[in-house]
Image (cartoon, rainbow, N blue to C red; front, side, top):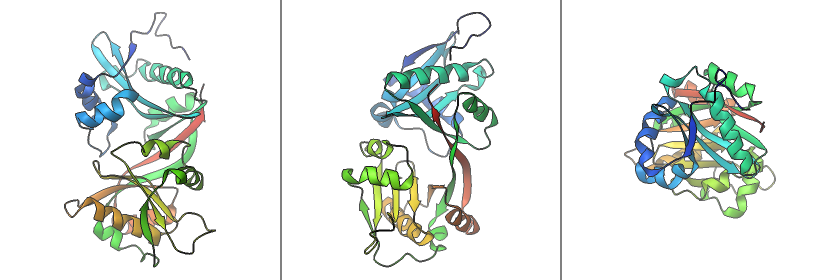
Amino acid sequence: MAVQVGQEAPPWVLRPGRPEDHAVFTRLFRELGVDDPPPPPPLWAAELMPLTVFAEGPGGVVAYGVTEALGEVGYVGQLVVDASARGQGLGRWMMARLAERLRAQGCQRWALYVKRDNTPALRLYASVGLRPARQAANLKLTRAHVAALPAAPPGLRVVPVAPTEEDALTAAFGLMPGKLSRFATKESHRLLRLEEPGRATEGPPGLMDVRASSGLLFPFFAASPGHARALLEDAFAGCGDAVESLNVVVTDDAPLDALLRAAGADVRNETLELRGPLP
């Protein structure tokens, strides 16, 4: 996957993240166009800096990528190219470097999320073998939107996910292998699941990862809209009365998506999860 710019070596070098990179990371992070705020310096240093690499050119940092090795799957959490450096092959060069990085960590496949309307990025990712596997919508919900859902089945309890349950929940909800286990190690994440009496053979009734610092619930899965209501009410209760809305990523769940949109939930963005073999 080596990329030539003209007949000369690419003008960029890749380097690891450093604590002082927080400012440039924050500047480029805003290019993602997401509701999540940039991580504060302590969170950046503890959770993201070790996973981040920066591309530097003659004028300074022009791109960054965040990757994480989840066993045989490499996850590209973020890839941002500065607007001033686009159209020069930098995105393709970055993908080649990220692939090398993940292969060196033992990964055989990779995955990432992309906005459905990001046509240039979709072309780039398709060119390296990534194909759509799942679709999702990020919906901004208030308590009123949650109240419009069907009532939750009786007896539901929201409980923390135990380490011994992570593999089974990963398989049940089709998550990237290793992702739940990695989230469980991060202080900014809170993994919770639904517990329902008498539901032994129908599969787990629900799962969510509450990221209170950014007001995001992702991943989020529920067996029915009523089960989703139980999870969402618990998330709002846990975040406190001062939190007026939460962003919830609804994945491959058309009935829940339709009910929330009909209730007036704001669609922040729609995404595709792409997966493929490492080139």
